[in-house]
Image (cartoon, rainbow, N blue to C red; front, side):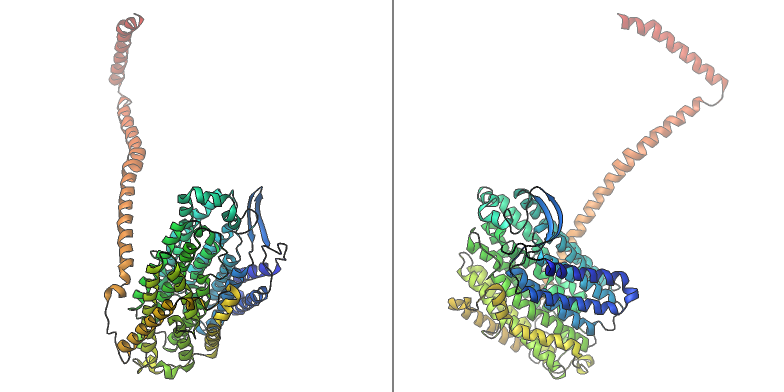
Length: 632
């Protein structure tokens, strides 16, 4: 890594500014009041400017805060500035800034507005920490902080039982994945002599290339597979992959700007970012890579099927996010299978990161667009109570159309097409990847179908309710971020080319890939138009998809059964051993002995005489009969 001694001023400011902003707002909001909102927006603006300035910096690995350093054992808050972190940081700060601006209008009348912006700043601090992290320990610390800040944001309207439950569900579900993530870090920590830096003389990347971990991967494949899958568990939780996907749709209970920031573009993308950052671990275990690819593929198609029967506009987009994250995770596994255990610079040119970039802009735009629609329709989220919004909200209609086209992957003219084709191209050419390729194609068809369904039902036809009939375009403070995100969506391919060295020509090497994609798009698009144009209710009623494959219900039964069984066993053990044998039995015996002893201390002379005589007889018996036998 060149420029090792590069000044850490900009990375330090990027990391600490949102932290002190969040601290100031959360501790002094009663004094600062609306000034807190200005501080949060100003902090997001400065962070965005710094991330732009870092685009021209050299690769470096500055130490921001030394923590523990004993021999080879070193834990520090350090930054890894490279192509991958610079690109991801621009995503986080640009979308973060636009969400801050959008929230000025969306949360204008909210009683907890100041608290909301404080939590936004805390989230920005947490995400910048993950992106800048130069070692796994630092990444894990900020990984947990992202979980905390998302808990606060999802449960912003905590007086609503559904929002409070959703925040707890997200927090607990992520802890399951994080436990595996921690075990994976500890395994690598032990195997690499306490060094979990990503780069450096004894860092993980170099160790996997030709050092200790390289030899360990060859001699102990089971250990390396376990380490890779444990790290992947962290991404399963954070990026909502099957079977820990259940928290993400419920997280839509938070304010819509939260959905755009956390659950479309940044937080859920942190799992994919981590997997790409740790790609050398996955590449060292082909079996782990295959598991990861298949979990991504299964998540992609399952979530797409669920999306086809959702009526809440935000939940359709939430399941769409699940599906696209499945694409990205599948790409991580497929590329690792393709590399086949050889050292590979995973960041530049990685199709998962390419899709992450393009998806971040158009999905954030779609979520903010849905927020503008919900705002205009008096907080109505059921798309079957909308309709005719094209005439009432022309700017939102155009921007939403651009986002929808990109998500569907309209050939050659949208960013989503190129990044999706890059993933399908890898699946097509990797040995053993053809089944996943066809899963990806079917997912693309379903994506076109459910987005056509959403777009037609919400924007075309006649208004179905008074709220839709009287809808008007959102305020300029909310519309402006939509326009900027639409421009970024249209320009995200060249941006990705700068950050990830991705050239939009990958799919052209495989005519089958392009043909399959176009056919899938046509089937989904025209199928959606045919079924939903002019309809006032859903002509399809597939309860399995509408009820999300009953996964939540299965989890509820499992938790109830195991929770009740464990509670029954623990209660029984407590009553029998702790309360019975250890506590009550000694007390009972002491009470009985005391009661018996009290009889002998009754104060009656004849009783004492009887005891004296009994004692004399006992002494005579011992002297005459017991002692002589002992002597012999």
